[in-house]
Image (cartoon, rainbow, N blue to C red):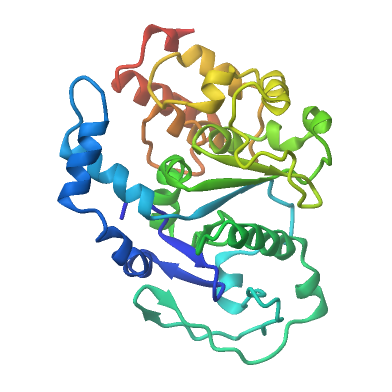
Amino acid sequence: MNDIPIRLIYLPTMELVGRNFVKTHFQDRIKEITEDLIAETRARARVTPPSTRETVVPTLVRGKVEYGILSHRWLDTGEPSYQDMMEKKLSGPSNVRHSLSTVTSRLKEGRHALHILHSPSENEVQSPGYKKLQKCCEEARRLDLHFLWSDTCCIDKNSSAELDESIRSMFRWYRNSSICIAYLGGITVIEDLRLEEWFMRGWTLQELLAPRKIKFFNKDWQRLTEQDDDKEEDTPLMTVLQEVTGIPETELIDFEPVPQYIDKRMTWAAQRKTTRAEDVAYSLMGLFDVSLQIAYGEGGERAFGRLIEAIMQAGGDSSVLN
């Protein structure tokens, strides 16, 4: 329950669903994890010390519970919110335009049932934020995924407790996703990456490093490369990514969140911008495997000071003083 998002978009119906619904959906696949499979997996893992049951089981579960996750640069206006999603239904797999709803929603197995009353206006249909979300859902369906998470509409930001949990957990949610779909809305080809604002924002640093698998799309939703996974070694894209981000290829491909190499990792974020000053610190928690209570309004310097303190308490190396 801590390792997947609080709620996800269920792609067959374009409804927001909770963790209990996801649990029920994958229950049969989880039952495939037998004691024999656990023992076989432990035997195959040639590590010292040998893998324990407690480390093998979560790995097997993560392989069964699949969801996609969207990384993108937020638009100034027009991004669908949680409240918007509870009032509308986006186009489903059949591309039939569903209706705008004045919603009564009920919780049923973690699922919000939407009651449709009338059709959307032209402005709602043309919203670039909704179009972006629809395109991402289409790509996720092509990958045979049933669930997708987007930070714009899957978090109820009116709930401070939910916002706090989401921000603290976000690195882990990206880490556990089957694939991160990264939308680069300002470019068409690899050579333009140096100009793409996605690489200048604070939150997208963890969204680049956390996922084990990532796929980049350009502004027209065309794949930036022919690869299924853009975290592959020795590719033209990886060469440009290193140049643009200043991050070594080994870290781009297999990043490990630890409270070490602090000064080096801080340089990766130094030129990035966030809308809220406090997010400079909050967006870096996952990179150093620490947790902070979210307190918007405290100011950027105080938030950053708490981040440094948390890193030191977690056993951070002396480079934190640089």
